[in-house]
Image (cartoon, rainbow, N blue to C red):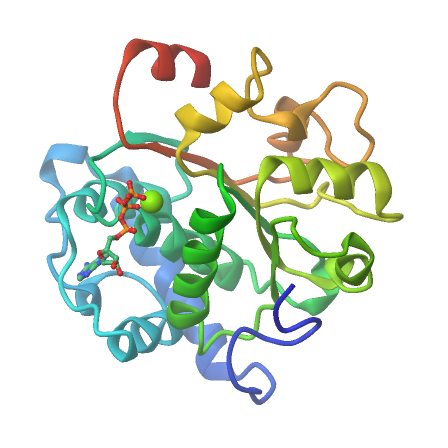
Length: 255
Ligand SMILES: Nc1ncnc2c1ncn2[C@@H]1O[C@H](COP(=O)(O)OP(=O)(O)OP(=O)(O)O)[C@@H](O)[C@H]1O
Ligand SMILES: [Mg+2]
């Protein structure tokens, strides 16, 4: 667990009118983009030209990211509009930012705060990959106020349990996530807004026949089934899945 109870970045003043105005402006830009036919959309080539918050743009600038890669150009606008995504792109093509930016932006536009609980869950098949995602999240999300945790095993689960319920975002491996679902009192995913499966083909291989990873086990009280999460009572906005290979097995199992 990193930065227990703390924000991703430095401490920030309370939300300002500038943020409220920015959120309205972003909502209206994305509303127009969502309504336009996909082939008429002029997809931005630079992060500075995307309809995203100044906080994320600053994080990207500080981390040295300027131009979008191909998968980011294809995925970012639909994901920012809140669409579900099922993507595949080769290793090293920049898939991490293609889901981290929408994760940050969906929570920012929904004015997510420390009081709102877990808003985004990112599942990765291995500790090493989860750690890389977490590092990138800390860089790009540095200016935001969200709290974020890393649940990857190899450490005492008890230490994580003290902080896990205060996190707005979690990056985790399937096994450790399951352990918290089983053993951490009050662990609650029911307010989730964005669910990401990175290397989804590998996660699905790990968890066998159960689609959507272990978190959607029937009867798991802290994680309602996907169709319920997407109902107005819960409000899951989008599910983003990425893989490094595109094949029918992956596509069919994610459907
Ligand atoms: N727009 C960008 N401009 C410059 N570098 C980028 C950009 N997007 C990502 N990168 C960098 O490219 C490298 C690979 O990115 P990333 O790990 O997201 O790829 P990936 O598609 O997830 O690969 P894998 O399938 O191996 O997980 C990282 O070092 C990342 O910081
Ligand atoms: Mg990756």
